Image 1 (spheres, helix red, strand yellow):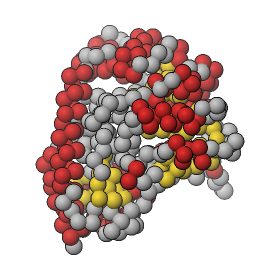
Image 2 (tube, helix red, strand yellow):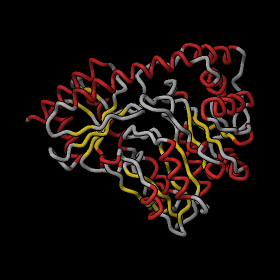
Image 3 (cartoon, one colour):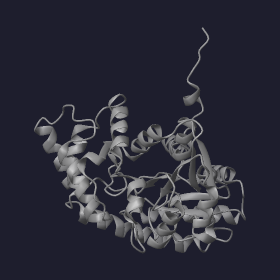
Image 4 (tube, one colour):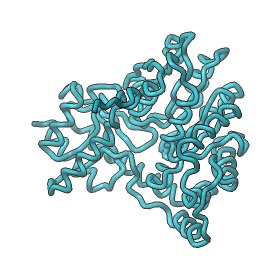
Length: 389
Protein backbone atom coordinates (compact mmCIF):
# COMPACT_ATOMS: atom_id res chain seq x y z
CA UNK A 1 0.00 0.00 0.00
CA UNK A 2 1.42 3.36 -1.05
CA UNK A 3 1.05 5.88 1.74
CA UNK A 4 0.61 9.54 0.90
CA UNK A 5 0.69 12.12 3.67
CA UNK A 6 -0.23 15.77 3.88
CA UNK A 7 2.43 17.88 2.18
CA UNK A 8 1.59 20.78 4.52
CA UNK A 9 2.42 18.69 7.57
CA UNK A 10 5.42 16.96 5.98
CA UNK A 11 6.97 20.39 5.40
CA UNK A 12 6.82 21.23 9.10
CA UNK A 13 9.98 20.92 11.17
CA UNK A 14 10.09 19.85 14.79
CA UNK A 15 10.58 22.75 17.21
CA UNK A 16 14.34 22.89 17.84
CA UNK A 17 13.80 24.08 21.42
CA UNK A 18 11.58 21.10 22.18
CA UNK A 19 14.01 18.76 20.41
CA UNK A 20 16.98 19.96 22.48
CA UNK A 21 14.99 19.82 25.73
CA UNK A 22 13.84 16.28 24.92
CA UNK A 23 17.39 15.13 24.12
CA UNK A 24 18.71 16.62 27.37
CA UNK A 25 15.97 14.91 29.35
CA UNK A 26 16.68 11.55 27.68
CA UNK A 27 20.42 11.82 28.42
CA UNK A 28 19.64 12.68 32.02
CA UNK A 29 17.35 9.64 32.31
CA UNK A 30 20.26 7.52 31.05
CA UNK A 31 22.24 8.65 34.09
CA UNK A 32 24.39 11.30 32.40
CA UNK A 33 25.20 14.51 34.26
CA UNK A 34 23.27 17.03 32.18
CA UNK A 35 22.51 20.65 32.93
CA UNK A 36 19.80 21.97 30.62
CA UNK A 37 19.27 25.64 29.83
CA UNK A 38 17.12 24.99 26.79
CA UNK A 39 13.54 25.12 28.04
CA UNK A 40 11.32 28.18 27.76
CA UNK A 41 9.54 27.34 30.99
CA UNK A 42 9.60 28.94 34.46
CA UNK A 43 10.90 26.59 37.15
CA UNK A 44 8.39 27.93 39.69
CA UNK A 45 5.19 26.20 40.71
CA UNK A 46 1.82 27.68 39.77
CA UNK A 47 0.71 30.05 42.58
CA UNK A 48 -1.50 28.44 45.24
CA UNK A 49 -4.36 30.90 44.76
CA UNK A 50 -4.69 29.67 41.17
CA UNK A 51 -4.54 25.99 42.10
CA UNK A 52 -7.16 26.55 44.81
CA UNK A 53 -9.56 27.93 42.20
CA UNK A 54 -8.97 24.85 40.04
CA UNK A 55 -9.82 22.59 42.99
CA UNK A 56 -13.00 24.59 43.63
CA UNK A 57 -13.99 24.23 40.00
CA UNK A 58 -13.52 20.44 40.11
CA UNK A 59 -15.33 20.09 43.42
CA UNK A 60 -18.28 22.11 42.12
CA UNK A 61 -18.56 19.94 39.01
CA UNK A 62 -17.39 22.57 36.54
CA UNK A 63 -16.14 19.87 34.18
CA UNK A 64 -18.38 20.20 31.10
CA UNK A 65 -18.07 21.86 27.71
CA UNK A 66 -18.05 25.65 27.69
CA UNK A 67 -18.51 28.31 25.02
CA UNK A 68 -15.79 28.01 22.37
CA UNK A 69 -14.30 31.48 22.95
CA UNK A 70 -14.23 31.11 26.74
CA UNK A 71 -16.55 31.47 29.71
CA UNK A 72 -17.99 34.98 30.29
CA UNK A 73 -16.20 35.50 33.63
CA UNK A 74 -12.82 34.72 32.08
CA UNK A 75 -13.41 36.95 29.06
CA UNK A 76 -14.38 39.75 31.44
CA UNK A 77 -11.24 39.18 33.53
CA UNK A 78 -9.08 39.41 30.39
CA UNK A 79 -10.87 42.58 29.26
CA UNK A 80 -10.31 44.22 32.66
CA UNK A 81 -6.66 43.09 32.74
CA UNK A 82 -5.97 44.58 29.30
CA UNK A 83 -7.47 47.89 30.36
CA UNK A 84 -5.73 47.95 33.75
CA UNK A 85 -2.27 46.77 32.69
CA UNK A 86 -2.04 47.77 29.04
CA UNK A 87 -4.36 50.75 28.54
CA UNK A 88 -6.32 48.71 25.97
CA UNK A 89 -10.10 48.62 25.75
CA UNK A 90 -11.39 45.36 24.32
CA UNK A 91 -14.94 44.13 24.78
CA UNK A 92 -15.49 40.51 25.73
CA UNK A 93 -16.74 39.82 22.17
CA UNK A 94 -13.32 40.89 20.86
CA UNK A 95 -11.40 38.21 22.79
CA UNK A 96 -10.86 34.48 22.17
CA UNK A 97 -9.35 32.05 24.67
CA UNK A 98 -7.31 29.19 23.20
CA UNK A 99 -5.13 26.30 24.32
CA UNK A 100 -1.99 28.37 24.89
CA UNK A 101 -0.63 31.44 23.08
CA UNK A 102 0.83 29.14 20.40
CA UNK A 103 -2.68 27.96 19.59
CA UNK A 104 -3.87 31.58 19.47
CA UNK A 105 -1.12 32.31 16.95
CA UNK A 106 -2.07 29.29 14.86
CA UNK A 107 -5.69 30.44 14.78
CA UNK A 108 -4.66 33.92 13.62
CA UNK A 109 -2.21 32.73 10.96
CA UNK A 110 -4.68 30.19 9.58
CA UNK A 111 -7.46 32.79 9.49
CA UNK A 112 -5.43 35.54 7.79
CA UNK A 113 -2.94 33.97 5.38
CA UNK A 114 -3.77 33.14 1.79
CA UNK A 115 -1.31 31.41 -0.56
CA UNK A 116 1.42 33.85 -1.55
CA UNK A 117 0.83 36.38 1.22
CA UNK A 118 4.05 37.79 2.67
CA UNK A 119 4.67 37.91 6.41
CA UNK A 120 7.43 40.12 7.82
CA UNK A 121 9.34 38.53 10.70
CA UNK A 122 12.30 40.19 12.47
CA UNK A 123 15.24 37.83 12.95
CA UNK A 124 16.13 36.30 15.36
CA UNK A 125 12.60 35.00 15.86
CA UNK A 126 10.73 32.45 17.90
CA UNK A 127 11.02 29.17 16.03
CA UNK A 128 7.28 28.64 15.45
CA UNK A 129 6.51 31.81 13.46
CA UNK A 130 8.07 30.88 10.09
CA UNK A 131 6.85 27.29 10.36
CA UNK A 132 3.26 28.49 10.73
CA UNK A 133 3.63 30.91 7.81
CA UNK A 134 4.91 28.13 5.56
CA UNK A 135 2.21 25.72 6.77
CA UNK A 136 -0.52 28.25 5.93
CA UNK A 137 0.85 28.87 2.42
CA UNK A 138 2.50 32.22 3.08
CA UNK A 139 5.99 33.50 2.33
CA UNK A 140 8.41 34.50 5.10
CA UNK A 141 10.16 37.85 4.71
CA UNK A 142 12.89 38.15 7.34
CA UNK A 143 14.37 41.42 8.55
CA UNK A 144 17.86 40.78 9.90
CA UNK A 145 18.62 42.65 13.11
CA UNK A 146 22.00 43.12 14.79
CA UNK A 147 23.33 42.84 18.31
CA UNK A 148 24.60 46.42 17.99
CA UNK A 149 20.99 47.56 17.48
CA UNK A 150 19.73 45.39 20.37
CA UNK A 151 18.15 42.94 17.92
CA UNK A 152 15.35 45.37 16.99
CA UNK A 153 14.11 46.44 13.57
CA UNK A 154 14.18 50.07 12.47
CA UNK A 155 11.50 52.09 10.72
CA UNK A 156 13.61 52.15 7.55
CA UNK A 157 14.09 48.37 7.55
CA UNK A 158 10.36 47.84 7.91
CA UNK A 159 9.51 50.25 5.11
CA UNK A 160 12.01 48.54 2.80
CA UNK A 161 10.49 45.12 3.52
CA UNK A 162 6.91 46.10 2.70
CA UNK A 163 5.47 45.10 -0.69
CA UNK A 164 1.96 44.96 -2.11
CA UNK A 165 1.82 41.33 -0.92
CA UNK A 166 2.62 42.07 2.74
CA UNK A 167 -0.16 40.71 4.96
CA UNK A 168 1.20 41.25 8.44
CA UNK A 169 4.18 41.95 10.68
CA UNK A 170 5.01 39.67 13.61
CA UNK A 171 6.32 41.61 16.58
CA UNK A 172 7.50 40.01 19.84
CA UNK A 173 8.09 42.17 22.88
CA UNK A 174 9.75 41.14 25.14
CA UNK A 175 11.52 38.94 22.63
CA UNK A 176 12.21 35.25 22.57
CA UNK A 177 15.16 34.56 22.10
CA UNK A 178 16.84 37.94 22.81
CA UNK A 179 14.80 39.32 25.72
CA UNK A 180 14.83 42.80 24.18
CA UNK A 181 11.81 45.08 24.72
CA UNK A 182 10.55 47.71 22.27
CA UNK A 183 10.24 51.18 23.80
CA UNK A 184 7.30 53.51 23.20
CA UNK A 185 9.40 55.57 20.78
CA UNK A 186 10.44 52.47 18.82
CA UNK A 187 6.83 51.30 18.58
CA UNK A 188 5.82 54.77 17.40
CA UNK A 189 8.41 54.45 14.61
CA UNK A 190 6.89 51.13 13.59
CA UNK A 191 3.41 52.68 13.67
CA UNK A 192 4.67 55.49 11.44
CA UNK A 193 6.08 53.00 8.92
CA UNK A 194 2.73 51.21 8.76
CA UNK A 195 0.62 54.34 8.47
CA UNK A 196 -1.65 54.38 5.39
CA UNK A 197 -1.18 50.62 4.82
CA UNK A 198 -3.56 47.70 5.33
CA UNK A 199 -0.93 45.62 7.09
CA UNK A 200 -1.88 43.79 10.26
CA UNK A 201 0.41 43.49 13.28
CA UNK A 202 0.57 40.32 15.36
CA UNK A 203 1.96 41.42 18.74
CA UNK A 204 3.12 38.49 20.86
CA UNK A 205 3.28 39.81 24.43
CA UNK A 206 3.52 36.55 26.37
CA UNK A 207 6.54 37.79 28.41
CA UNK A 208 5.07 41.20 29.31
CA UNK A 209 5.16 40.61 33.08
CA UNK A 210 8.88 39.80 32.96
CA UNK A 211 10.39 43.20 32.20
CA UNK A 212 13.33 44.17 34.41
CA UNK A 213 14.49 47.48 32.93
CA UNK A 214 12.17 50.16 31.59
CA UNK A 215 8.44 49.85 31.11
CA UNK A 216 6.43 47.44 29.00
CA UNK A 217 4.30 49.13 26.33
CA UNK A 218 1.62 47.17 24.49
CA UNK A 219 1.83 47.62 20.71
CA UNK A 220 -1.89 48.28 20.24
CA UNK A 221 -1.80 51.12 22.78
CA UNK A 222 0.38 53.40 20.62
CA UNK A 223 -2.48 55.05 18.72
CA UNK A 224 -5.91 54.38 17.24
CA UNK A 225 -4.72 52.97 13.91
CA UNK A 226 -2.36 50.55 15.71
CA UNK A 227 -5.26 49.43 17.90
CA UNK A 228 -7.32 48.69 14.78
CA UNK A 229 -4.57 46.77 12.97
CA UNK A 230 -3.01 44.91 15.93
CA UNK A 231 -3.98 41.46 17.15
CA UNK A 232 -2.70 41.17 20.71
CA UNK A 233 -1.50 37.70 21.74
CA UNK A 234 -0.92 36.78 25.37
CA UNK A 235 -1.31 33.98 27.91
CA UNK A 236 -0.38 32.75 31.34
CA UNK A 237 2.44 30.27 30.71
CA UNK A 238 5.33 32.59 31.50
CA UNK A 239 3.89 35.21 33.87
CA UNK A 240 2.35 32.81 36.41
CA UNK A 241 4.12 29.54 35.60
CA UNK A 242 1.05 27.91 34.03
CA UNK A 243 2.77 26.22 31.08
CA UNK A 244 0.97 22.91 31.49
CA UNK A 245 -2.44 24.49 31.99
CA UNK A 246 -2.52 25.64 28.33
CA UNK A 247 -4.20 29.03 28.49
CA UNK A 248 -3.63 31.69 25.87
CA UNK A 249 -5.78 34.41 24.39
CA UNK A 250 -6.01 36.95 21.60
CA UNK A 251 -7.75 40.29 21.33
CA UNK A 252 -8.77 42.02 18.10
CA UNK A 253 -11.00 44.96 17.19
CA UNK A 254 -12.01 43.11 14.00
CA UNK A 255 -15.15 41.24 15.00
CA UNK A 256 -15.32 39.44 11.67
CA UNK A 257 -11.82 38.02 12.19
CA UNK A 258 -12.85 37.03 15.71
CA UNK A 259 -15.86 35.17 14.26
CA UNK A 260 -13.64 33.31 11.77
CA UNK A 261 -11.28 32.28 14.57
CA UNK A 262 -14.14 31.06 16.75
CA UNK A 263 -15.48 29.02 13.79
CA UNK A 264 -12.03 27.51 13.19
CA UNK A 265 -11.57 26.66 16.85
CA UNK A 266 -15.07 25.20 17.09
CA UNK A 267 -14.22 22.73 14.33
CA UNK A 268 -10.79 21.81 15.68
CA UNK A 269 -10.55 21.71 19.49
CA UNK A 270 -13.65 23.55 20.78
CA UNK A 271 -13.15 25.15 24.19
CA UNK A 272 -10.04 24.94 26.33
CA UNK A 273 -10.06 22.99 29.59
CA UNK A 274 -12.97 24.21 31.73
CA UNK A 275 -11.01 23.94 34.99
CA UNK A 276 -8.11 25.96 33.55
CA UNK A 277 -10.57 28.69 32.62
CA UNK A 278 -11.86 29.05 36.17
CA UNK A 279 -8.34 29.00 37.62
CA UNK A 280 -7.11 31.57 35.12
CA UNK A 281 -9.42 34.24 36.50
CA UNK A 282 -7.34 34.32 39.70
CA UNK A 283 -4.21 34.77 37.59
CA UNK A 284 -5.70 37.80 35.84
CA UNK A 285 -7.64 39.70 38.48
CA UNK A 286 -4.70 40.67 40.69
CA UNK A 287 -4.74 37.89 43.26
CA UNK A 288 -1.46 36.45 41.95
CA UNK A 289 0.41 39.76 41.68
CA UNK A 290 2.65 39.07 44.70
CA UNK A 291 3.66 35.71 43.22
CA UNK A 292 4.35 37.36 39.86
CA UNK A 293 6.51 40.03 41.47
CA UNK A 294 8.49 37.46 43.48
CA UNK A 295 9.19 35.45 40.33
CA UNK A 296 10.27 38.61 38.53
CA UNK A 297 12.70 39.52 41.34
CA UNK A 298 14.22 36.03 41.23
CA UNK A 299 14.57 36.11 37.43
CA UNK A 300 16.28 39.52 37.59
CA UNK A 301 18.88 38.15 40.07
CA UNK A 302 19.51 35.22 37.77
CA UNK A 303 19.81 37.46 34.72
CA UNK A 304 22.33 39.74 36.44
CA UNK A 305 24.44 36.83 37.68
CA UNK A 306 24.44 35.05 34.32
CA UNK A 307 25.38 38.24 32.43
CA UNK A 308 28.21 38.93 34.87
CA UNK A 309 29.63 35.42 34.54
CA UNK A 310 29.30 35.24 30.75
CA UNK A 311 31.00 38.63 30.36
CA UNK A 312 34.17 37.02 31.77
CA UNK A 313 34.36 34.32 29.10
CA UNK A 314 36.67 35.19 26.22
CA UNK A 315 35.06 34.52 22.86
CA UNK A 316 31.48 35.09 23.97
CA UNK A 317 29.56 38.34 23.71
CA UNK A 318 26.35 38.88 25.67
CA UNK A 319 23.90 41.78 25.74
CA UNK A 320 21.87 42.20 28.92
CA UNK A 321 18.18 41.58 28.08
CA UNK A 322 15.42 43.91 29.26
CA UNK A 323 12.92 41.10 29.76
CA UNK A 324 11.93 37.42 29.34
CA UNK A 325 14.36 34.82 30.76
CA UNK A 326 16.89 34.25 27.99
CA UNK A 327 20.36 35.37 27.02
CA UNK A 328 21.16 35.33 23.30
CA UNK A 329 24.92 34.91 23.22
CA UNK A 330 27.32 35.54 20.37
CA UNK A 331 29.76 32.61 19.95
CA UNK A 332 31.01 33.43 16.43
CA UNK A 333 34.64 33.80 17.45
CA UNK A 334 34.60 30.23 18.80
CA UNK A 335 32.37 28.57 16.23
CA UNK A 336 30.12 30.29 13.68
CA UNK A 337 28.23 27.02 13.31
CA UNK A 338 25.85 27.26 16.28
CA UNK A 339 24.50 23.74 15.81
CA UNK A 340 27.99 22.27 16.04
CA UNK A 341 28.87 24.51 18.99
CA UNK A 342 25.80 23.32 20.94
CA UNK A 343 26.30 19.68 19.97
CA UNK A 344 29.93 19.72 21.12
CA UNK A 345 29.00 21.53 24.33
CA UNK A 346 26.37 18.92 25.17
CA UNK A 347 28.66 15.98 24.38
CA UNK A 348 31.79 17.27 26.14
CA UNK A 349 30.41 19.19 29.11
CA UNK A 350 26.82 17.98 29.49
CA UNK A 351 25.31 21.45 28.98
CA UNK A 352 22.23 21.88 26.79
CA UNK A 353 21.58 25.24 25.12
CA UNK A 354 19.71 26.05 21.91
CA UNK A 355 21.58 26.89 18.67
CA UNK A 356 20.86 30.30 17.20
CA UNK A 357 20.31 28.83 13.73
CA UNK A 358 16.92 27.64 14.97
CA UNK A 359 15.99 31.28 15.60
CA UNK A 360 17.29 32.42 12.23
CA UNK A 361 20.68 33.69 13.41
CA UNK A 362 23.71 31.43 13.27
CA UNK A 363 26.75 32.10 15.43
CA UNK A 364 24.64 32.53 18.57
CA UNK A 365 23.03 30.33 21.19
CA UNK A 366 20.12 30.85 23.58
CA UNK A 367 20.67 30.29 27.29
CA UNK A 368 17.57 30.12 29.52
CA UNK A 369 18.07 31.37 33.07
CA UNK A 370 14.73 29.93 34.19
CA UNK A 371 16.50 27.73 36.71
CA UNK A 372 18.17 28.07 40.11
CA UNK A 373 21.31 30.13 40.77
CA UNK A 374 23.51 27.13 41.60
CA UNK A 375 22.67 25.44 38.29
CA UNK A 376 23.40 28.70 36.45
CA UNK A 377 26.82 28.96 38.14
CA UNK A 378 27.70 25.32 37.40
CA UNK A 379 26.48 25.54 33.83
CA UNK A 380 28.45 28.68 33.02
CA UNK A 381 31.57 27.18 34.66
CA UNK A 382 31.25 24.27 32.24
CA UNK A 383 30.72 26.63 29.30
CA UNK A 384 33.83 28.56 30.39
CA UNK A 385 35.83 25.32 30.46
CA UNK A 386 34.49 24.36 27.03
CA UNK A 387 35.31 27.74 25.46
CA UNK A 388 38.78 27.76 26.99
CA UNK A 389 39.55 24.35 25.51
